[in-house]
Image (tube, rainbow, N blue to C red; front, side, top):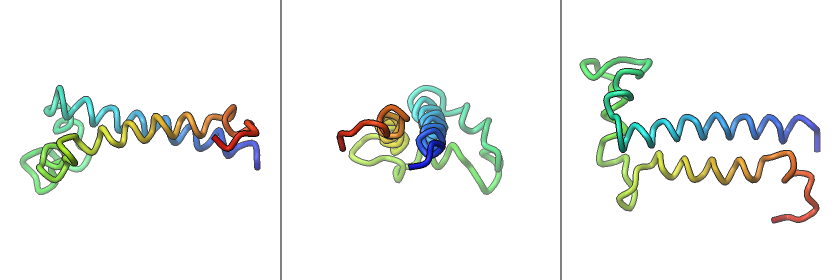
Length: 91
């Protein structure tokens, strides 16, 4: 395995953790911040980022999809760390 692959995947997982953490925080605490930081438009245009994260389709089993993403990226960081890739154990 090349030396850069664990580092690159860890960086990508950390970025994903940041985005999913922000969306989870916005869902529970500050929906207006998601509306204000939407790069494609505000709530008055055809594209509404806040409408997507607060819709009924953004929930699975009563939890926001962003929370599942947050949990996924926490697990991916643990798996992708360079220390984990050097371990002889598959687990």
